[in-house]
Image 1 (spheres, rainbow, N blue to C red):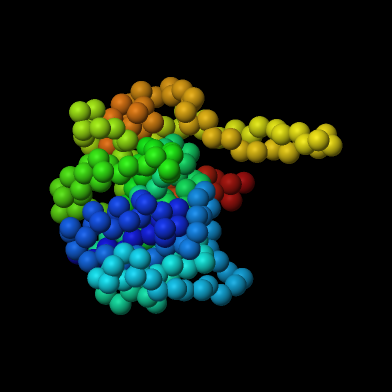
Image 2 (image 1 turned 90 degrees about the vertical axis):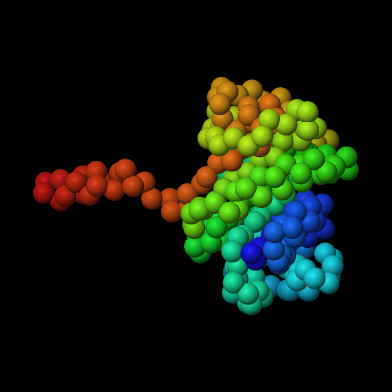
Amino acid sequence: MNFLVTNDDGIFAPGVRALVEVLSNFGQVYVCCPDQERSAISHSITLRKPLNIQKTDLFGEHIHAWCIDGTPADCVKLALDVLVKEPIDFIISGINLGSNIGRDVYYSGTISAAIEGASLGYKAFAISVDAYDAEKLNLKYPKQYLYQFLQNFLHQDLKNGTVYNVNLPYVEPNHYLGPIVTELDFSVKRYKHVHIEDGMGQLFYWLKDYRKTIQSEAGNADFSLITQGYLTITPLTVSFINQDLLQQTQLLIKGALKK
């Protein structure tokens, strides 16, 4: 199996190294990541400047790796278009610092990189860990949970064009409850603007993350389950087409034209 790895925390983030180490047990790994953090950049791509590409041996001589001064979606597009000559089986984005839950799917560069791959017809994963302190981060146990999950899941009949959003709990083994398929928790209101006043009385607004204090109204969705110790999996579609409303909308249009 051939894996293309990217992320939005930058090529030097510990999560991408941990992901490379796990995936190396299953096949050949290629890495293409931004040269610096690009968190919450969503699915943006670079249109009005050329991209600079640097090859790196950061992950050892057996791992082909590049960093670029672009976005996570740029990394996927560039790797598939130009850099990687071998056929790719899976595009895996992560391991992101901080879980991607609920509305995070709209903002996350980690998820958007996986969506870019899925939109091109690949099997894709976005993988995040429910930890937030980079200085104290220890991925020993999350790596074990991810390895166990992928060992079984990679060999299943997975659907091309789908993103599997995976969140790893940051717990010790005696608190780990295993994988569970769940929905996104849209009841969680994680980000809110707060105002800051400078010495001259000028107001500024800052988007604050309330992850540590938010409450959920959905006990069976991703936010609550990951805090309990589950590894959560949510399959995401990338087509944006509401199949249930296609025929209904066609009838509405026909009715409007007759008037």
